[in-house]
Image 1: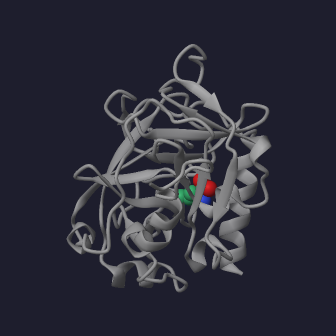
Image 2: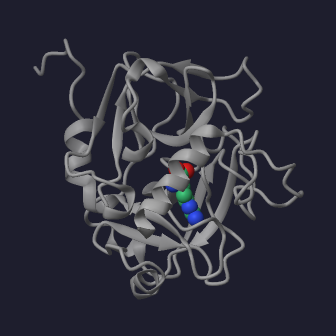
Image 3: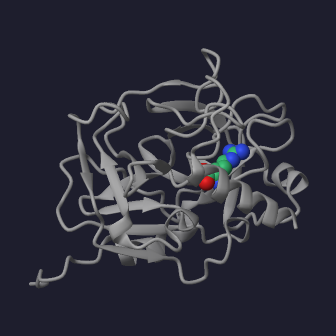
Length: 263
Ligand code: ARG
């Protein structure tokens, strides 16, 4: 039932985007984060529906491939999705570009975010002119050591019941020990997920950040996936352990575009 609650909260609150209870206080961003520039993070993108409402994040991992969460893509057709790349300020329509994906791949074993496999890849028809971010590989175990300082990025909510952010935000979140995540969440699967943040809460990702990147040392180590509420004490954010999906993801991300013949 907890699972149901988490998912219902994610899906309903995020996609509605209507629940706007005032403005977040200055300093409450992502939650407890700060502004980030698109120049320094050119691979950071957000997803909107065909009415322009932002509901998730994503990462450019190859010129025509955007990695996001399965729960961001499930039940949507490519034509009702837009990838917004090269734009830091949602209101700056002159910057960057909006692209409709051509295809959506969702991990075959995906059921719900808190059961794992929360990854999807959007394929674009044309290459994006922004630098992609490499994904963590199976051998990158060291990046997931507890205490490693990661950086999460997104345009999601700046407080649990607040509005999503106009600007790209970032927050520094240390990896937490798997045992702590398992205590926080009975359904936590350590092979497929990791959790990051602070035991006391206060700084966290939130609704609308899902699908977006959490990075360290120029690599994508995680995808924002789920959590109970946002920035709550003892309830850290949970992220997809990308290294675990390296093989599955490479088979999709490195696939040659249709029409290109392998010499
Ligand atoms: N599922 C949420 C989304 O769709 C992300 C939740 C992250 N929650 C957290 N407490 N870090 O945007």
